[in-house]
Image (cartoon, rainbow, N blue to C red; front, side, top):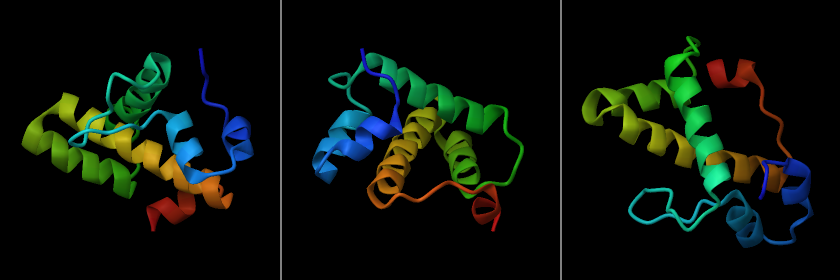
Length: 105
């Protein structure tokens, strides 16, 4: 069973390995069930918290809320979870640290 540990992902040599580690194999903008179940559930839970609990005007949240209005909560959760996985991959690839101040801008 894998857990989200950025240190392990940074040790991977290629972006493809990192992306596979995060389990973002996608098909038609879905997180497929061939990826790790725990990782999927963590990503969807993080997306749910961002959409429902966080009140800051973060661009990712605002984007997810627009999807939620149009397509419903479940689809918005999956879309935001997928985007979170892609963002984490990009951050791991170049070593960027997340900062709320930049997200609010």
